[in-house]
Every structure is written in structure tokens, then in C-alpha cells.
Length: 124
Image 1 (tube, rainbow, N blue to C red):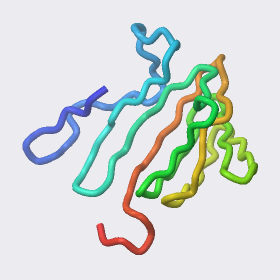
Image 2: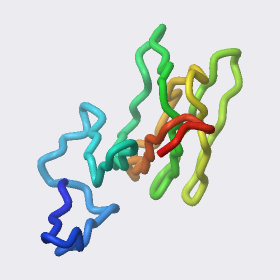
Image 3: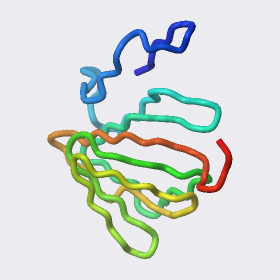
Image 4: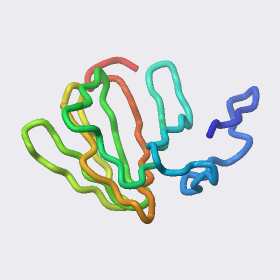
């Protein structure tokens, strides 16, 4: 999915956040960039029963705001805390807060929105 912009930056076609591509077989998680700027990026992530492989942790240099648009997902944080998120839930994961996707719904597929932005206190 890419966003078509005119010369003025105006979106010329809508982004359909809940449409599942017919070519996606669901075997791998799918991340699609919606828009990016100089210091931030917005992505849509499709998951169908996915989880981060054992032993792997995300330890990002940036903050990440995530929201669930469809289905559900749970995030495990280093230390054992698990956050289960349902449709309409959003959460800000601060930079270097180690985490992993613990589980996601299969039917319907989990649709996440992830906004990657500079850590709190950083200039945009």
C-alpha cells in the first residue's frame, strides 16, 4: 500500500486501512508504509496468529504508538508484563522499552497501526 500524493501533498486516493490484500496468504506478517516524514513513519501491520520468535525482542531507538483497528493482539514486555489490546485500544511504547508481539488474532486478522516517532523530548 502506498499513498498517492499530488504536488501539493494532498492525498489523491483514500487508504483503506481494513482492506486485506487478496495476495496476502497470512503466513508472514505484512507491514505496509502509509506515510513517512523527516522523523516519523506511519505503518499498517497485518497479523494472522503471529508472534515474535522466541528470544527476540524489539529494542527500538524511537517511540512507537500502536493501535488495534481489527481483531486483537498482545504485547509482552521485558519483565513479564503482557498487554492485551482490543479494537480501539492504543498504547505508546517508549524507546528502548523491550517488547515483543506475544499473540494476535487469526480470524479476523489483527490490523495494527504503528506510528514511529522520535523519543519523548526529541525535536521533530
